[in-house]
Length: 548
Image (cartoon, rainbow, N blue to C red; front, side, top):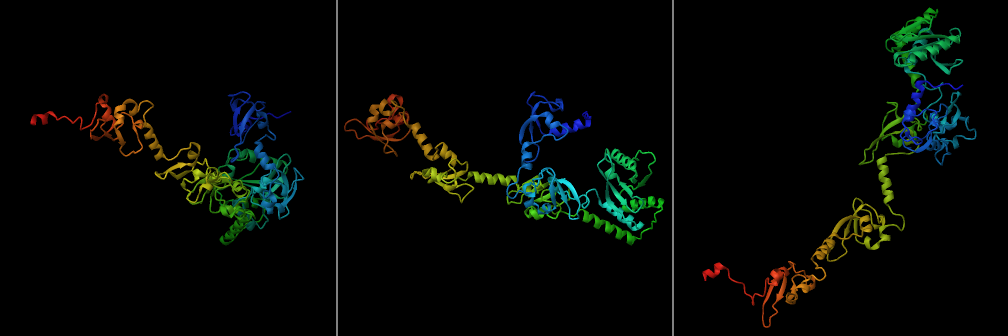
């Protein structure tokens, strides 16, 4: 019978799917909270993995199932496809290649055919000869042998162990692991193998055992250990609630995590068992704490091949480790997925962003702003036979320079590029220089704006058919000698209302009259405007007539 899911498990599943849910395609408008976990509705999803964003459709029940829920197909392909040249685990991490023993999921796949982020479960062997199973991704992300590394340990436990060993003379082992029936492998902080079948001691400081759910986990672990007849003692920091098991002796230490205080509590329970215990001198305490510090430093030593070794160019751009503050590139393997802050050191950029270390050290990703610039520059360069000089040689002759790229020529420019260039009018009488994009010059066939304005002005001044000075005032047109400043203009090119100055000659026989006036001055008042000054001398004003 299938076990029903509790409310907390259902809430956890919905919280996991909320980040990728886009829409319910079977019932449009339906919300995630209204869909049962076993629903066959087809939904649209968007991958939340940084740098992916792939969208796909699948049934809701496939994504919400307890065992092997489906995920982003593109991410699955990237993790599980065969690596290309320079992408295999053997090439990127030779140390892990030496520790690889066999692939438990796909026996035919080895370090040469596995990617660093593959999820294949493999067997590994550390330099100390310890064998353990782990996925390739976990190993690439920095997880090593549990018996050799600092997993499950702390500097506090190392210091307490060295103080107890110096004061009692007994051998003290750290992070002892025992498989209790019905449970996963349990770890115990201190183990004294010379006391009977072996004394187990768990240290419960507030900072690790005062979290929600810690009391329930500690109770279940202690109850299982006692049921298996293990000799277990617990020392809890004062202020923590006692473990609710009948007959269990409670020992208190603290408050705080002073190693000497906790070692003294361990000495108290050992003296109750008849173990000799002596007070340490200040010099012996210092020596014991130094041994604890050395033990802790050895446990948390960085990887043999660090991210700094694999990608030394990242040192200048590394700002901080956001997932594990204080952890530098020399203490993280190249495949570590810790999210770090980076700052581009390219002159003129200084962009800051966040990205996993593996994306930078293994996949070669860098500053996106600089990437956009490089991509734009690459896309703006023409292929052979596609440049402006080759496609439109006449237009290329007008190019002076490309703004912002002084070393570019017409062979470096696409005909429809949006880069602003400086052009020169090919008309020798003009020679005007003006800015415009290559796309505007090529697509709309635009040319010199100065010549365009002149053509527009001429078009406005040119009379419509049948409305010229020659058509409407034939007698006046016959007296036109020239348009001043425009030798080729005639009466057919003039409007009667034109203000251009012209030279006229009287049409009467033997009249020497010549004068300057505009067509408007000649044609106003029905053609009786400014006439020959000889035939029609100007009248004197009243003031002048009165004076005479």
